Image 1 (cartoon, rainbow, N blue to C red):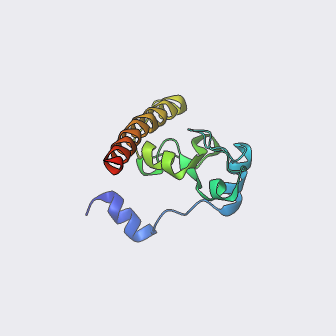
Image 2 (cartoon, rainbow, N blue to C red):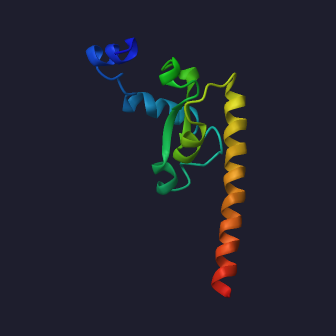
Length: 119
């Protein structure tokens, strides 16, 4: 068993971010996704999908410090993944590029579905 697995076995899972700390980050970021700008104050459904993201992933040694934590919507958080980036800006640029790529795929699929339905 490798050292990380042994550590988790004996120490248990790493502690989650407290609700109080998460709210501090949401407030600091004005309830907006750092990556795409989704406004969590616009409506309940938008707020509901906000998460706290480790820009430098916790699984890769990222700290639970305020400068490494940002508000992110779930889709952006998933697109960013557990990759390691040189900077916050590099992470944002990557996520926005991925969103655009998925947007193009979505548009093609919608168009194909509409064309197929009309036939």
